[in-house]
Structures are given as structure tokens and as C-alpha cells.
Length: 151
Image (cartoon, rainbow, N blue to C red; front, top):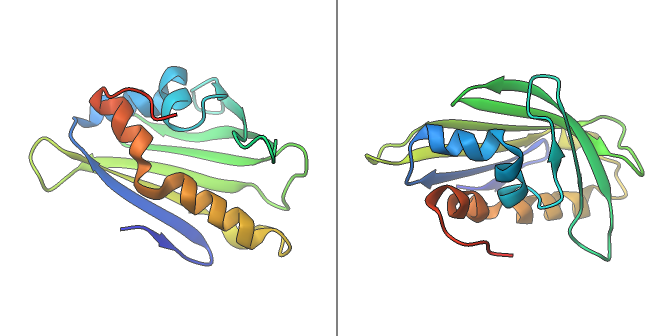
């Protein structure tokens, strides 16, 4: 179930794979480039940096962040912000992995927090863009289950 609230966006998906395979997609540059953003450049470690650009040529925004948590096979957290016009406070993205109810599946939950700190004049557009980006997390499922790219 996906929900957009004033302070967070939550997206959850079940993937037919063990948590270790999903962790690989979350914790490697190749995996991040496939499901997160194809321009991502990352040093995936506690305190490591990640940078990427928007894929929309009409809005060529650049972003950077720091991996604030990497708990193997369980949780990843990134604090991130725009480079060109930084927001007042970085946003927080967390991804959690756990066993699903169905045998052979794992559940992935993505949370975007601190959305209430976005500037009023761009909050609605940014929230809509983020929600659309995470709806169903299909690229993550494709990557983990071995399908071809969707872009």
C-alpha cells in the first residue's frame, strides 16, 4: 500500500527473492543505477556519498547525499538534498527489507521523511514527483528478479 502524507511517503512491495539478493540491489552502485537512478555515483558505505541527476531533461536537478545507515540485509538510510538550490533541511530516505508472509518473498518498504521541510512554493510538485518515482518500486523488482531494464 502506498500513502502520501504531509510528512512522509511510504511505498511497500513484495519481491520474489531472498533478502540477500535485494540487499545487493540496495548496496551496490550497479544496483542503485538500475532501480534508484541511472546517473547515480555512490560510495556505498557508512558515511559514503551518493550523487545523481534528475532524469527529466526539462528539470535537470542535481542531488547529493550521505549513507547514514547500512545494516546488512535489513536497512539503508540516505540523507539527501538538492545541490543547485538546497532545501532548508535534507530529506531522509530509508529502505527496509524483511521476510514477507508468502514463502520465497521478501518485503521492501521505502520511506521518504522530512517532507514538511520542503519550501512551500515547490512542496506539492516535489511530493508528486517523489510519489510517482516510488510507486510500486517496479525497477527494484525487475533488477532483483532478473528482468531487463524498463527505461
